[in-house]
Length: 255
Ligand SMILES: Nc1ncnc2c1ncn2[C@@H]1O[C@H](COP(=O)(O)OP(=O)(O)OP(=O)(O)O)[C@@H](O)[C@H]1O
Ligand SMILES: C[C@H](N)[C@H](N)CCCCCC(=O)O
Ligand SMILES: [Mg+2]
Image (tube, rainbow, N blue to C red):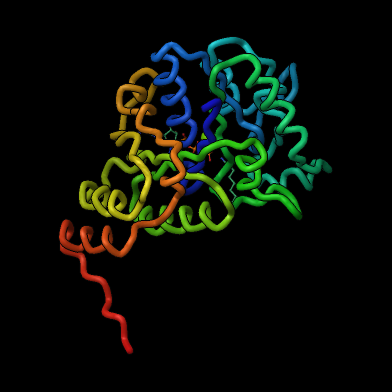
């Protein structure tokens, strides 16, 4: 395994925090790790050009200092959907540039943790989606589920889309972005029953999340790259286990 692609159920679900946590967890095993944010919207203009907070943090926590332009080859100022920001800037986002930057980073570290932008099917241009990046880079996918009301639907839709677009889901992380979420454990049980990939960690709401604390909750060693974990949603059998665990009822099929 030379890298991971971190996607999420939505923007703001915790992809950056979990990416930083995974980087720290991998570094703790002795591996050298670099972070990457291929496309970022929401950047500040400084003396060296546009800088995105996620990319700056991923770069700062890398095992060595990578050039900013490799960590974040596409940076756009407004915090809006990236294909709109690219259109406004007159830029066409292209996979070759991203692949070149990724290969350069991969040559400098054992692992590259690549954070997406928004969710799995964010458009990047007229013919390009975020979901094309992990495929082009040959990277397995980690799904961050931002624990809040509505996340079950978002997780199932995202996994169905990962499957149908040829992505390889090798693990998921539950991240409590809503500290007041009710029935958190029942939600977790539902997610665990529906997602046929290992849960790499359950992150509580943390007052001030930092990479080394996040790493304590994460278990990248559970990632299973065997083909049997290919982002399948739960089978009928696991769905019935789910019903018995949570008391949930599924609608009876009408003839
Ligand atoms: N477990 C947590 N405990 C407390 N705060 C969290 C936790 N996870 C994420 N946050 C906070 O929630 C906000 C969104 O998280 P984050 O920036 O990682 O999301 P994201 O998915 O990377 O968003 P984007 O789509 O903008 O890249 C941040 O302020 C972050 O610090
Ligand atoms: C600016 C924000 N923090 C993200 N970087 C961009 C999220 C794009 C979401 C696009 C969409 O799905 O509508
Ligand atoms: Mg982020």
